[in-house]
Every structure is written in C-alpha cells, then in structure tokens.
Image (cartoon, rainbow, N blue to C red):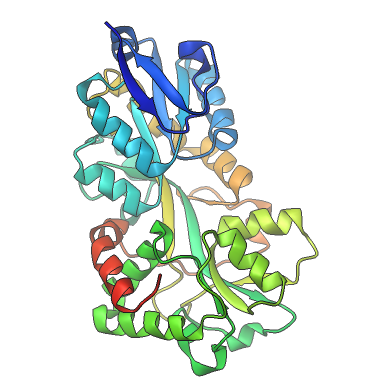
Length: 346
C-alpha cells in the first residue's frame, strides 16, 4: 500500500520516479524506504551545486545517489513526518542553526568516523558528532567603495556607531543567518552588549530589513545605503555577475574574535537503511576533491583546512575566523530571536 506525503518544492527525483516535480504529492513505497542499492540525499543545497559532486562520488564508488532538494525547514519537517519510513539517508542543511535544530529533533545518527574527525576541525562539528560541516561561509561586512574607505570599518558592533546612521542595510532578523550571527555575539559578549549592538543597528538602518542578502547589496549599489552584512558567497555571486560593481568585502572583528563563520553540513538520518554508505558519502565530501569543488562552485571556503580556497576567494584576502564551536551558535538561536525582538530588529 502506498503512503502519500506532501513534497515541499523538491526539484529532483528522476531516478526514483522517472519524472521531475516541483510541488505536489509523491508516493513513498516500501521499496523506496528499504532500497539499499542507492543513497537518498535530502539537500537544502541547490541541485546545480550538489549534483556534480554526487555524480563524481557515484562514478568513483559505484554508489548511486538520488538527490531531493528543498528548503531547510521543509526538509526537516519532511524527515520528521516520514519517521521510520523515510527514504532519506543523508540530510544536508545550510547553517549550524538548522543542523542543530535537526539534531535536537532526533533526526541524526551519531557519526563514527576518525577520517572526518581528522579532516574537519572540532569547532565545525557537533560535539556529539550528529552533524559535520562540509563547507564554510563567512558573514561579514560589505561596503560601497565609492562612499566608504575600509579604514572606516572594524567590527559588527561598530556599524552601530552614530556615523553610520541612515547608512546601514541589513537582511531580516528572522533569517537563520542573522540569528546565528547574533547568537555568536551573545556567546562572546553576553546578552546585554549584544542587545545594545542590535539596537544600535536598528537605529542606523537606511531601509526596512531586506528578505535576501542580494537585496542588501543591490541597495548599496543603488546608493540607498553604504554598508551591510552579507554571507561571503552571495558577494562572490554578485561580483561575478557584475565585475565592475563598486563594492567590496571587509572582514569584521579582526582585532577581536574574528569574523563570524557558519557552515553547510550534513548528518546521517537516524532511520536510514544505508548508514555505512551514507558515512562513506560524508567521508568523501570531507576530502580534497569534494572540498575543492565546493569552494569553486559556490564561493565557499573549504571546511577541511588542508584544502586551499579557490583563486576567487584568495583575491578577497585571508582573514581570522571565529573559532567558536558552532554547536554553541545553534544552542543560542532562541536567545538570539528573543533578543532581536526586544531590540525591534524585524
């Protein structure tokens, strides 16, 4: 008997169903749940990024991979609703906040892999090894090179100074990327100081917070504001489309804690019927070839420090990254939400 479940904007399930769907209902059959001849990956990372990696993994190992893509929250809810019948073996997410939430929902099996522990630094892994980072993105300052000199910049908190009044643009405080940034500030500075910084940001806003990082950069390029905070790979995408853009990155907090970083990562689904193959995939993704592709395809930094950033990233310059364990960032997400509400950061 087939069981029907809602599909949340998945874009790729050809090898299982022979069709491509965007929305609707898909049948989950016993064969899908128990098939051990291939891996099923639920991924919040885009198909154009993940498919080349997974194709190479399949070519080298003979393990076929079916990729489903969707939004982080929808994928988490899908795995929860499917329970023990889920066909998913690996769940890939963006941001430690999402990974931590999935872990707290009991969706991940503990990863036992000396290879991953050797490849990925401890602060980029869950201390209980329920998930591991696979790539790094920095959340830092972006500024107009026409109206701002880099020596005018220093830290996240400094963007709350009076000289930035009416010159700052931010993404919505509801987005997990900013929840994680504020969570890291709470961890380093305490709630009182973090709240003061966020209140200062709100006072300096030139416009209502935007839905996307790309909109922050467009606002800077259209003179609506002079500085903002974005994820570094969004800057890479924008500057590739528009090489003449009068805009640059500035690495925040270099004199103190280092620039806030976050990760994309993955865990092995607890209900997976193919845990050894799933582990093999995560180990492969933590090594040289996959790490290089991650960096080149999406302007992210390798999580494995033995791999160098791509040429494009190297042009942005080296920076000191925050060494705070990202599990702490996940733990403080709710505190960050409450703090931003009190500071009226929408």
